[in-house]
Length: 463
Ligand code: BGP
Image (tube, rainbow, N blue to C red; front, side, top):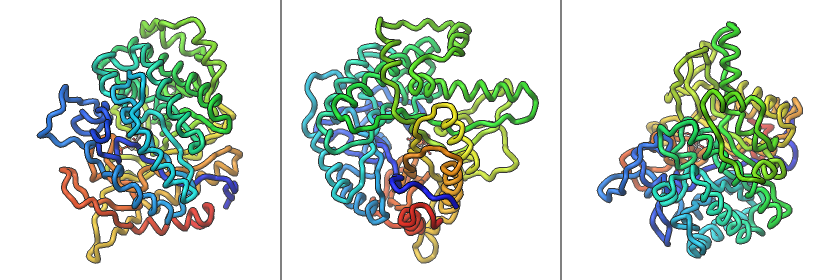
C-alpha cells in the first residue's frame, strides 16, 4: 500500500450551523440556517422565527458550550487538523455593520486556542450555508453586489484577528451547489432565475478573489482554497448521448473550480450564458481580480457517484444529483451509492485539470446508529466505508495526486444539512439527541472511534 506524505493532515470537519447551537447567544445574529424548516439545504425558510417551533440549528449539538469536551475527544483520536466554519453572524450579526461583535470573535479565539493546545491545526471555512439573515432579507443575498464589501470586511476582520492561529482557510462551502440550493449557498431565494443565480456567482467569484488577496497580504504563510461538492457522475450507458450529457453535467459543476482555480471564465460558459439568456453585469477590474488571485488549493467533498442519462430529470440531494441505479454499487440507508473508486477517479480528474493541491475536506458515511444489547455502537458499515475510501485515496496519492489532507465529515454526530435530522449520523462520536430535539446531548464513542485513531496513528497504513 502507498504511504501518505509525512505532513499529510488527518482530521474531521463540521460546520458552525450544524453543530454550535447557541444561535442567538453573545450577540450572534440569525443566519439563513436559523430559519429553515428541516435542513438548510432544503431552502424551506420561515419568514419569521417562531419561538414555538423546533429549528435544528438553534441548539444543534451545543458545540458552542461543549467544544472543550469535543476537542479533547478529537485529540484522543489523534486529529492533526479540524475543519469548522466561522459563523459570519457571530462576527457581524447583520452582516452590514462597520464594527465586529467582540464576543463572537472571542469565542473563536477560545476554540482555536483549544485546538492549538493539542497541536490541531484549524481549517476554517468562511461561509458554510450560514449567511447573516439580514443580508438575505434586506439585500437579496449574493445577487446584490453590496455583499462583496460586507464579506471582505468580515474576511479582513477574521484574517487579522486569527493571523497567528489559522493557516488553512477556504472561502465558500460547495459553491457549485448554487444551481440546486441557491438559498443555502448564496442566500438567494429557491426558484431564482439562472440570470440571478449566475450574477450572484459572479459576485461570489469576485469576493473569493478579494478574500484570497487579503489572506495573502495579512497572513503570508497561509493557504486559502475554494471548496466544491465533487461527488461524481457516470454515463448510464455507452450511448454517446449519455456520455456527452454526463460530461456536460460534470462541467456545470467544475465550472466553479474552472473560474476560481484557473482565474477566468471558461470558453464553454459563453454558450451556457447565451442559451440561458444570462447577461452578467461586471465592474471594470473584475476579470483582472479573478486572474490575479486564484485559489491556492481545491477543497472538495466526495460522498458518492451517480449514473446519468441524457435528458433525465435530476433529483438532487446535498451530495449532488441522484441518478439511475448503479448495479455495481451498494447504497446507504439514505440511498447514496458507496463508490470508493470514484474518489480515486475524482482526485485524478482534478489533479490533471488544475495541477494544484487538493484537500479532501468532506467524506463520510451517514447512517442510523442503533446501540446493541450492551449499549455499544458497532458501526461496521462506517468503518468499511472509511477503509475503502482511504485505500483509494492512497492509490490516488500513488497515482501522483498532491493531496494535503483528509477530514472525515461529521466526526461527531451533527445536524444533517440535507434534512435537518439528527438520525442521519456520520460520527465516530455519538451524540444523544433525536430528530425532535430530545436527549441528554451526552457524547459516547462508537466502535469507529478506535478505528480512526489507528488510521491516524499509522498515517493511513493500518486500515
Ligand atoms: C455537504 C455539506 C455538509 C454536509 C454534508 C452531508 O453537502 O457541505 O454541510 O452536511 O454534505 O450532507 P447531509 O448532512 O445532508 O447528509
